[in-house]
Length: 337
Image 1 (cartoon, rainbow, N blue to C red):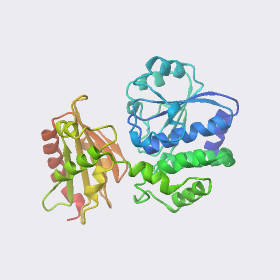
Image 2: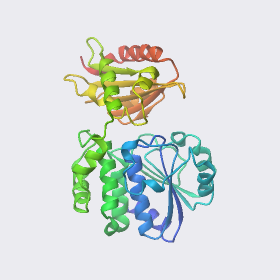
Image 3: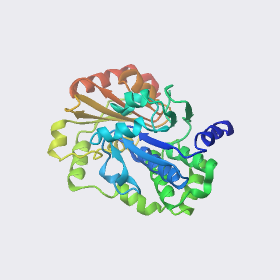
Image 4: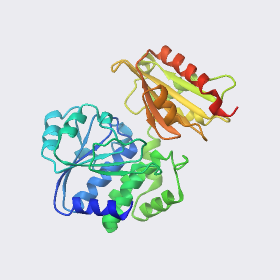
């Protein structure tokens, strides 16, 4: 973070403010971790802040410090609107387009509050007055660490450290993704010194599978298919299969990475049917130079990062698979085979 941007943050927070913090829909470890860490810091420095999530978040995140005070827009509509309408500042974390917060978007857009975006994805929107956008960072939590360090590093305690470590760990694939840098490890080292306990955080995130979730993983792996002569695999999960295995929000988190763990595979995709929203939710993961951000944006109304992105299809599951196969055939030259 450059000094000019840091001074903008200092100016915005110089007096006590009423602040709203909003992560993206279906918040993951990075979105929730960055929000909770920022809220803890703001509370310690005399501000009144409230986190509002667009909807529920996965059960494996419900242990995080401070999460019980979060308002969920999906079941606290009137309260959430009132908080937004009276806010002095609105922080939006881990997303850069208001469409990523669904029905909350219009209320944020028309608010007179100072809007601040902190995010590491490509192609940021222009809704915020202060933009801290850095696509070279592996997580928004690493950016929040830099912000807090610049404002008052001594305020980082075990609560803030735990939240930030959780987000960095999950968004870097346990430090496996190319976005993990020497700086990332330096930050994590400091967070451990401040009290974050890596082994316990890892257990709470990854060692909490229910029996039905493990059976769902078995179904997903059974459905895994490889495209002939191209280093690409894909997984499908129908609504019927989700229902049979008692699907809960967050159950398919990380499933796509199993495909990428295969030797010689450069791209893994999972396509999950959602009958309620009438969409197919897609996640893309790649190794090397294949740009899934570009691929998802071009073919599936999505985007994200070079090696990790999301997308959506309004076709049926079978039609989405057909569209995906045609897109891969068209992009075959990108795999250097």
